[in-house]
Image (cartoon, rainbow over all chains, first blue to last red; front, side, top):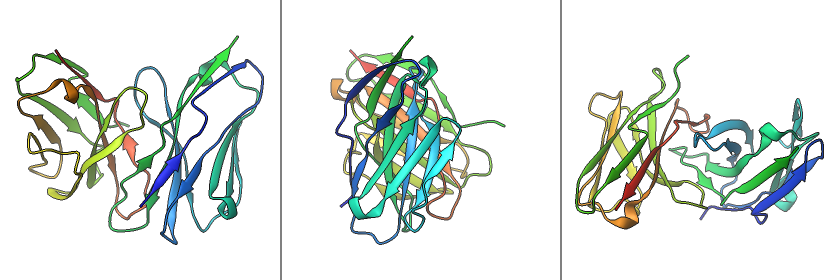
Length: 115
Length: 114
């Protein structure tokens, strides 16, 4: 069975602070994919990143960075110098490398960035 | 570049009525998914299609729910005899084979059953 745990439910920071969103996953698959999505108030899930389980290199994209640690089954997401526009719900998700790509989502973390 | 589009975006219906949602995936995508999201929760998988074939259905998809993708392009999700517990956002998504490719979501269709 697949499971994604996002223990933090709500985080509030002041603009320009750094913030890390935690994600822990469980899977019996040896190969799998991990994702982060952003959901602004409009409702659309915006794709942020996909990571293959074979690739443990950390990734940086502008103010966003991701830390994948297979040993602890974690895939954490850091926003550096947060901005008000980063306010949204962030979901971590897991997909098996099988016949389909259905995603198992965590419950999401509501991030509020105050000016 | 056209993303996944869903219609209607919002629907209010009386309990017992039928509703239908439409999804137009990204044009070259052969996989299409339906998810349901309730307040405070992450999306939950309902069903998915590979071209016109419905390959998997979640246990969440009761017999009042039916999804079709007749020509392998757009899809419809129909809910018959709606119940208040059906109130949720219904998200459509699409992707390209093979497995692991990024799944792109639409803006969702909000359903309120009163």
